[in-house]
Image (tube, rainbow, N blue to C red; front, side, top):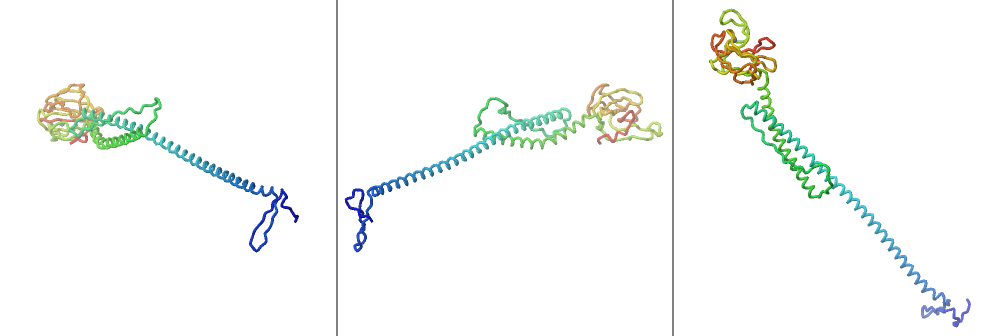
Length: 327
Ligand SMILES: [Zn+2]
């Protein structure tokens, strides 16, 4: 080791004191080194601070990124929710218009039924079979098409949903009513159709006492076998005689054999003949309905007592009328 004087201005001597029994150790170091040590320490601390700062910045950035991505996620969720709400709103609107359309259709059906009822009342009115209740629907024109776009508020949608619910309840009530009434109306319609139909079926007088049947019999005048082309119903002179079916009077006349008589032609092609009348209350060309009074029972022509001789003629030939008549 080189010997260095204390006077050397570029060197410094460091005395290291350990234990009392041990010798003092001298370490000679150069002055710049001594100066450099605190500087290096300072730099190290600065570096540490800078590094910490950087690390802090990095953490902040990461947190920021995390927050941003979360925020984006939330935004996406909110967008999804908004879309879902929009979809629901559209569905409510569509349902509402469907329910309105359905109400209108049901109203039309109810109108048709009422019309049918009116028809039955006019042509078929046979006793009370229950009146149809008035089925009315309030008009609601809130759903036109086109026009400007007006944003829909949540409370409006709620109201719409409520109205739709009410509509469905009303429709359900109407359907109940229809279910109850339609079969009754149908039955009445069938009766009406039957009563205005051309098929003769109505028993033609008050009395139901058959005195002579259709077919071969002993002739009441000659006492020999003869063909009886109709049925004889005994009754009182002046009893009403009814048209057995709807149709058109094609002949009213009198002769020695038939007495006073009426011939009605029915839409189906059948004819009904009413013989031995005391009076004729219709004229040729008249239209009659089933059960309408057309004349009075009598004893005119080739007759042995007051009775109605009734015939049904099919394609120019007399047939047995009994199978046709309600008894
Ligand atoms: Zn007869």
